Length: 384
Image (cartoon, rainbow, N blue to C red; front, side, top):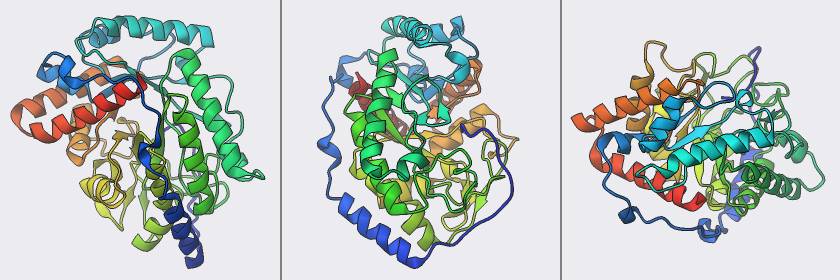
């Protein structure tokens, strides 16, 4: 999500020595513990009334809307406890004061909800060309990675991003990008969205950004797991299927390395990509693959926070799948939050309905569904 456009396939294999250097850097980063994050006000789950099946389903859906004014249907769904959060795009924001007023409307609706937790209010504030709010961070991730002190620059950008979002009432940033780009001008480098071709630099910058931003009370999101750095310019998952064929050794030593640092920094969310990784699961995009989500991210890397999909409407997913099918498949794979970002509030409602039906029928087991809701509940408590 959020890359404007794309062009031709080129790929470069990194030297084994680079992978070894990253493994060393990641191991050093691992000494820092995830529980070093500041404590926020806690909202114990037992203080909330029992939720209906539809409300439980709603705890896993992030909705969106067109234009500058949230529609009544979205406000009603929030008040009913059927929405976990809202994502904002450039078309939703004309100024700081305007979006602050909108967030006030959303929070007012949420005050009537039986779910007495803050909404997750998010946007993509990566820096450089990918910013939904005016202002910081002005530097792109690539500029930060090329600075004299990349980690220091990343820390400053993380603080600035957090303060900017918090200033208008947002509490989740869908950043930083942790993709390790391979070729100049490729999909992730075209808009300078990657810190570096060196996984050690990406690891240190990502760790610094996450830690600094989360000290401001704004949750960070590491993306796009297990990495889109090998995607060529024309390989845009928003527009169509993308298959990446790097070896398992390269995928783990290069692409996944920055996520070790992110987990050690206590990152609150990880976004999975919609690319297919043949070394892991040749039959499913990452966000629909339990192998990627459960084995690689949760078991191998030890991530215990909230998983979030990339745009649920992405062209990389089989076009025959409607919103409901996509939502259930992603939840089955282990995605906690489903990002309905088509700027249509009915998309979020369709996802909720599908999850509700799947939970009631037993297609989605109640135990794993409840565990996902609890992870989202913990995140909503943390941002409060």
